[in-house]
Length: 115
Length: 108
Image 1 (cartoon, rainbow over the protein chains, first blue to last red):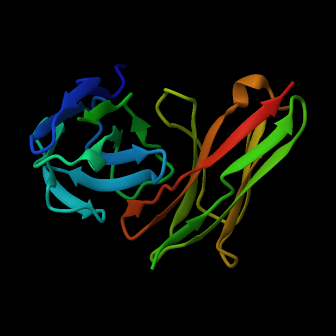
Image 2 (cartoon, each protein chain N blue to C red):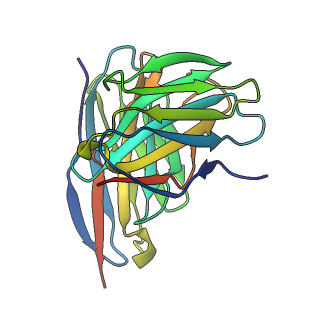
């Protein structure tokens, strides 16, 4: 069974641009969560999607948005990029919501660098 | 509010036992997970505690005390490959909270 696939693996952008990251969950998984990881802040929750609906959102500005498609694939968009958005963006999928004993499976992430 | 505390770094010797503590505060708490992340890798699930007590999975054990909002991960017979970051992740209010994790250094 294929794991969580994130594309692209690496991305370089400049301030003010926008970026779209993609995540394909494990087949059969309906919940997709996005996280931002930086050395200073650790792993921070961005949002979670289930059945094409955003179910939860972390404390990030509105420049960060996402969506989920009917096949559970998800995209994350960041507009008006800032230097502080440089981070590893991780996507995780799980079978369902609120089922901690069913682990989240993480992708390898997209490394975003803002120049 | 929400809070999560675990040590930033822990050092132990190969073959020894190490315990990584985690205290948390989150509304709607329903369970505590642990994840491992090697440098350059993705976090991987280690264990889950939904009830008080100890859960054992091979060399790793995890403990939860709901009344104390406290848990720990116990790693036995440490191996060099256990050098990684470890995240406790309490689940509450329909989301899972991670933090900065604990960096575990293993000395030969």
